[in-house]
Image 1 (tube, rainbow, N blue to C red):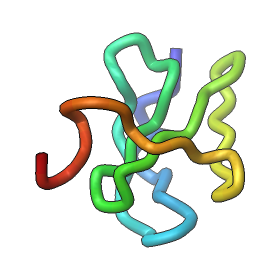
Image 2: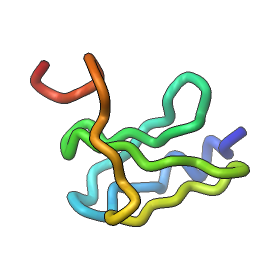
Image 3: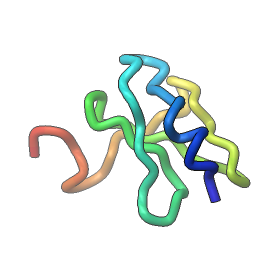
Image 4: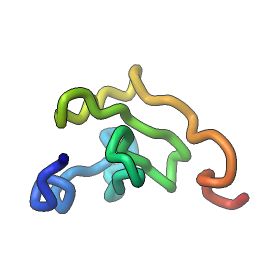
Length: 62
């Protein structure tokens, strides 16, 4: 489980906006960029080249 204090300070490395965890805390979502960053063993992988497009209804503007 991700530390709530860590979530408060994490930001998207591309746009610098805050990110939010999904329900299972497997991904951190950036709504502005419409990308998600995976979480492995409670460690966020916040590398722009590792980001994936958010699938489905989570994308901003949809």
